[in-house]
Image 1 (cartoon, helix red, strand yellow):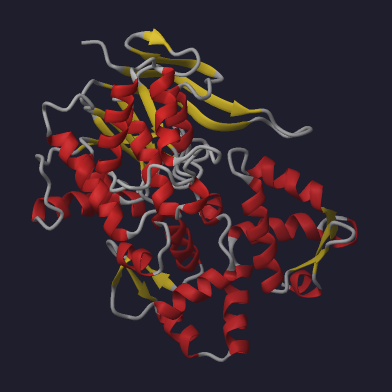
Image 2: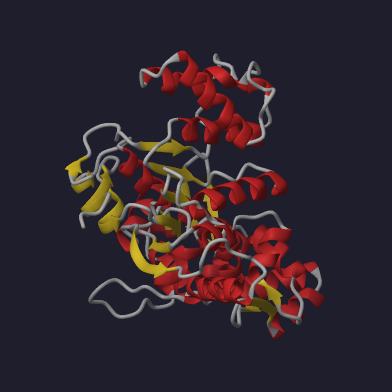
Length: 428
C-alpha cells in the first residue's frame, strides 16, 4: 500500500554567509508514514525536528529530494495537513473565534458548519466562553489551546504538532494529551494520522505508535522504534515504564558515528555541549549527590527541557564532576571534592579540567602559534567551522570562549574583536 506521506532523499540546506559553507539542516531523510500512523519525533535541539514537519506541511520546500502526500509531490501548502505551532501563530487582530473561523471560511464551509466546528473544538480544549477574547488577553497556555482548537476544527487528515504542550501548565497539558490519546484510540475518529515534535519522552510513549529519533548536525534519522503498547495506555504500568527506560537509554548513551567512519573521539564530541555555560555546570553539580538521581526527574524538577539538561550533564561528565550510570546522574569523587572546596579551589579544579580537554588543546595550539598569540574573532569562527562543518558555530564559540576565559586560558578584546592566549596558557 502506498504511504500517506513519504520523504524521499530529502535534504535541506541554508546558504552560508560570506565564504562559509552551506549549513545542512537535514541530510538524506527517507521516511514513510502510513495512514493511521501516529509518530513522535525525538532528538536534541538543532536536529531538524521542527523543520521536518514544516516540510510535511508544505510550509518550506526541500533543497533536494521530494515530499509526497498521497503519492503526489507537495508543492506549496499541503491540503489535508493541519499544523499546531510552538509559538501559537495566532492573528492578534482576530478574536479566539475569528482565529478558528478563518481557515474554515477559506474552506468554503457554511456558517452553521463553521459555528458547530468552532464550538466543538473550543470545548475539546476547555476554552468555552472565550470566543470573543483577543490573543493579547490570553496566557501563553491559552493561546496554545486556541492553536490546537484551530487545527482540530478543520478535520485534517494529518495533524502536525510542534511541541504543542510545552507552554501549558501540567494539568492542562495532561488533559489535552489524554484527549488526543482518546482520539488515537477511537477507530471512528477521522483524524488518525499525527506527527508530533516533543522533548517529553512520556508524551511520546503515551501517544505514538512509532518514535523516530533524529541525530543532529546534520539532522538525520537515527532510529525508528515501534511502540507496540495497546491503547489506552497507562503511564504507571510496568510495560509503559519499560518503553520509557529503553528510550531514555538510547537518548542518553546512544552513539551515532557518521557512516563509514570510526566512532567519534573525545574532541569531536565537544560540540554536544555547545551553548553550555560554566554557571549551568556549577548549578547542576550543586544539586547532585552520591545518591543516583534520575535524569528526567531532575529535568522536570528544574523545569528544563530534557535535551538542554542533557547537554549540561554531558558537560559536567566531560569535566569529571559527575557520572551517568543507566538513567541516573551521580557525583564523581572529583565532584564530591569540588562540592567541599572553597571558591578559589573550585576555580582551580575546573581550570585544570578545562586545560586538558582535547578541544582546548587544539584551540590553544591554534591561538598560541598566531602572531602575538592573538587571532581575529572572525578567523577563529572560521577555523571552528572548518573543524565542525555541521555544527552551529555561534553557541559553540560562546562555550569555547567563556570556558577558556574562566580557566584563564583566553582573553577577549571586544573592541578589537580578538582572542589572545594568556601567559598561563603559554606556560601550560
